[in-house]
Every structure is written in C-alpha cells, then in structure tokens.
Length: 270
Image (cartoon, rainbow, N blue to C red; front, side, top):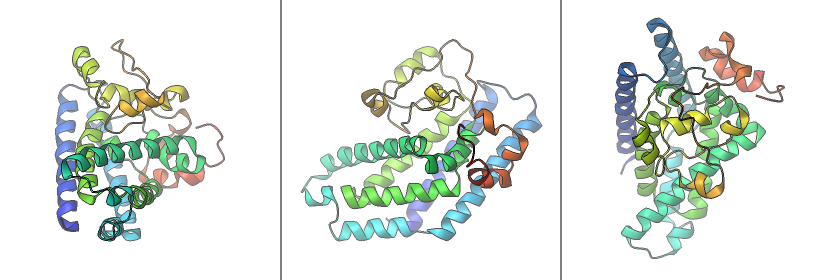
C-alpha cells in the first residue's frame, strides 16, 4: 500500500464517519443546541482548527511515519518481526497491541503535565459532538506520531495491521464523540466491547475522576482490565462536558485553541 492509497482510505473513512454522525446527531441529538447558528459556528471552529492542525503536522512530519514504518519492517525491526507468525495470528495480535498502545498513550496524556497541556484543548470543547473528534492540537498530533514510531520499533507491528486498526478506529472515534444516544439496551451491550458515546461522554466530564477514565479509543477491554473503567450516567440526563477553566470565548476560537497550551501552563488544575 502506497502512502497516497493509505491517506485516501483514511480521509474517505473520516469524511464518511463525519457525514453520518453529523446527520445522525442533527436528527436525534442527545443534547440539542440552543440555536442552529451556534451549532454551525461550533462545527466551523472545530473544522477550521482541524485544517490548521493538519497543515502544521503535515509540514512538520509529512509521510515520515509511514516511511519509517516501512523501513523498520523491511529491516525486521521489532518483536513481531522476529517471530515467524502466520498472517491469521499476526493480525489479531498486532491489532490488539496497536489498540493497547493507543490506550496507554491516551492515559499518558492525562497523567503527564506537558502532554495534558496539549490534550486539554480537545477536552475544552463545551459542546461535544462529532466535530469534537477533529479538535486535536498540533503538539498532540506530533506526540502521537512519535509514540507510534516508538511502538513500531519496539513491537514490529506490520504497517498493514496498524493501517487496518486506524481505519476502524477513525470511524468509531467520530461516532463516540457524536452527540448521540443509543437505547439503553443497545448501549449496555455495546459497552462490553467498544467505547460508546455515553462512555466517552463520561471521559469528557469536567469532574477529574470521571475525566481520568475510559481511555480506550476503540476497545473497552483495556479500561476494564486495567482499572480505569467508569460507568456512564444512565439516568437519561447527559453529563456536562468540557473543562470549567477553559469555557471563555477566547479559548474557543481557532487562535485561542492554538495558544491554549501556552496560556494555561500556569493553571495548576484544569
């Protein structure tokens, strides 16, 4: 798979998931926006920030990660490259290791101050919807790419396995950020396997114990096994989201989001 093929697939899944989730939450939102214009402005800001962040990340890294991953695989670097595993065994092992790596990186972003200063931009959104998934600071994107390179060299997960995981994860991530509500019966079944909108909404709570939980991006097993699982509120009243210290209009503009890590570095509790 070439870099252009991979980017085309990822962008297609991203666009498709955004369209589906946005239409879905427009018809049956879990928390209705007070005004159509307010929602349009919110989506526009998150989309604009995503474009700026993508441009910055592309200028800094471009296709570096894919090139390095290909080089590492050709040279047999990493644990899985040393084991003669058939593809049908390599796929589930590599998939689970990739997902576990995403879990630990997300957890690190909440426990290490420097990473949290970048990640708090994502959590500062006071109106969680599908566009919130696009609200990623360039510094977080850079750290995530470096983390993937570290895992690639340590574990030797093939690029095609990582690409498959990321394609599925992109769609699930958009949906679980969506302003959506499943029926309670479906929700309780799904949350045994994947991160649902209700589980991830609890993660976006301004209350720190709830915010520091449900780190999984795709599978929920890691939170359940490693003690970071938190049940969502099933009362029918969606939880508040966002960070109380970052609700001012100045922190919600594209420029404000870019500068947030620098501006809030002296605030001890976000």
